[in-house]
Each structure stands twice: as C-alpha cells, then as structure tokens.
Image 1 (cartoon, helix red, strand yellow):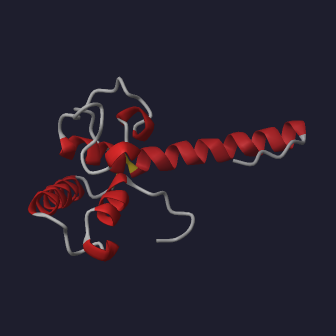
Image 2 (cartoon, rainbow, N blue to C red):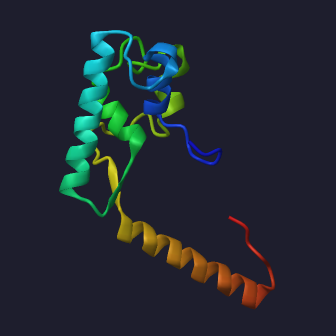
Length: 127
C-alpha cells in the first residue's frame, strides 16, 4: 500500500484479524467467513458493473449487517459507525459504487472551472 492510498475498513480488518498481520491467516473462522463474504460482494459488484468505482466503506458496512452497540464488526472501538461513514443517516441499501464516467465528468467540469477562474480572475486553485 502506498503512503497516499486511503486506508479502508477492510485494510484495518485484515491487519487486526490475521495472524502476525499477514493479511492471509485469519485468527478465527468468523473472520475468515466475513472476509470471504466481503470478497464475494466486491467481485459481484465488479462483474456486474466493471466500469464503476466501488465505495469500499459502504461495501464493508453492507457486508457487516447490523451494528452491535454502535460498532461496526471487525474494527472494534476504532470504528463507531459515525467515525467511519460520513453520513450516519444514509440508507444501507445505497449502491456502493459510482460510475467512472460520472466521476470523470465531475473531474472534467472541475478542471474547466479551475481554468475559467485562473484565466478570468488570475487565481490558481489547488485541489
């Protein structure tokens, strides 16, 4: 993992629930089953819509099901749902992906806006 990569709930889960933090040897059957379910869901979404980006946080939350005592399974006290997920009132049935084409269109419009501001106002915008 590069320094600039965002740490996902699955990254934390693998670190906490595998022996010697190897990301492969699970500490118990429940952890192995949960990870297998998460991988299955990711593959299902990827095959169904290969040109969409996956929202890893939403995918992880959907795989965990109900929270217990306000905590998301597999992340311990680190992961109160409000800290991991930006919108605590969001529906868990939300599709955990975004179309790449939609994201590309937003990036393109942002670049056009930046060029407009720079040419008309002489200001540089750093995002």
